[in-house]
Structures are given as C-alpha cells and as structure tokens.
Image (tube, rainbow, N blue to C red; front, top):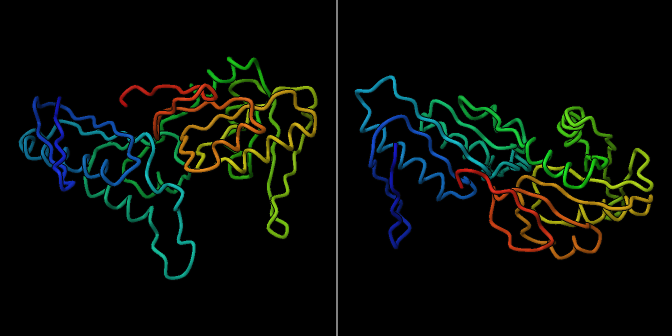
Length: 254
C-alpha cells in the first residue's frame, strides 16, 4: 500500500491513498505534525477500506512525542502523555509499535501497543567498543540494562544520582578500574547527567567511557559531553546528527 502526504502553507496536513492494501505507517512520531500525518493517512485508508474488513492497519512510531511526561507532575498541570495516547487511540490502528519507550506507561495507555526492541543497536555498539562494562545511569534504567547485559553476557555496573543542595552526587556500585564502560539509556534531552556520570567513572579508573542512547535529542548540553564522554552511539529516531563524535544507526523506515 502506498500513500502521499501534502502539507499546505498554513500547516494543514492532507493524505491520499495511491495504492490500496494493508497499511503500515512508519514515522518518527516526535512531533504533533507527525501524529496528524498518521491520522490523515488512517482516515483516508479507512474511507477506502470500509468494505475490506480483513485488511490490517499498523502504526510504528520511532520516537514517541511526550513520552517523558508519563504522569501529572504538579497539581493543575496537564497529563501530556495521556492526551497524546488518546489521540493515537482515536486513530484505531490494529497495532501500534513504539521503539524503546521511555516508560511502560506509554504501552499501557496506547491500545494494541507493543515495544520495538533497541537491543540490536546496543549489541552493535557493544561489539564495536569491544566488550565494555555496561553502566545503567539510574535506578529507572537498571531493569532494561540488566536484561541487555544478560543477553550480551556482559558485566553490569549500576549507578545512581541524588541531589544534595542542588548539586548532583553520583554513586557507582562496582569496579570499573582499567575498564571500558558503556552507559546505556533510552533518551538524552541534554548531556549534563551523562557528563557527570562519565567524570565519576573516570575518577574511579575507567579507561574509556562511551554513551548509547536510542533517542538522541540533545536539545542542550551536547558540547559538554565531549569533556568526559569519548564517543556517542545512537539511532536517528529523533533527528539526523552530523558529527564525528557520534556514530548513528539508521532506522529502516525513516
């Protein structure tokens, strides 16, 4: 099945079905415009397939917008992920696949949702560096990183961060002296947390510290990373990055 998208000068998005059949929409999904593209495509497809009840429509989002807003942080504030997931649910796709979601709440709120694993990208990174010690950057990332470490038969060192008088204090729970380390996380909005973690790892004797994130936003703090991180590995789920400091894996469908 093929379709085309047209964006008007005022921002309006329209879709047209060119060749009909089963539908699989693949988008970054990192903007509201992408969600409206998916909705327009699905609406046009529904109109063409009202009499074809056996045809299947699938949506794959490689970087779900608002995925960190997985709760109502303060009284009176909007629950943004809930709003976004309701919009996706209203499209009525038969299956929705999300690449490495930040929170399992996304999969809970989206109907017919399943996770698309990021393991292949971490494995490529692990092999390129040469069997580094995996480092989980916080308690929230520990479970996922532990599962990857078991699959790779890799050593795992947990770390955690607490703030004391506004200053981040990092604890590392393992021996990294003389070892190459790979910090593994889902998303990087800024780079400061990873910068401080890499600094702490090197203070404890790590010979090299690299960073893997699936969703490389780097809206701020990217230059700071170069002070302590040796290299960054990521996918192009959020955007393209042209920098020798970064190895970026291209996702099929973007």
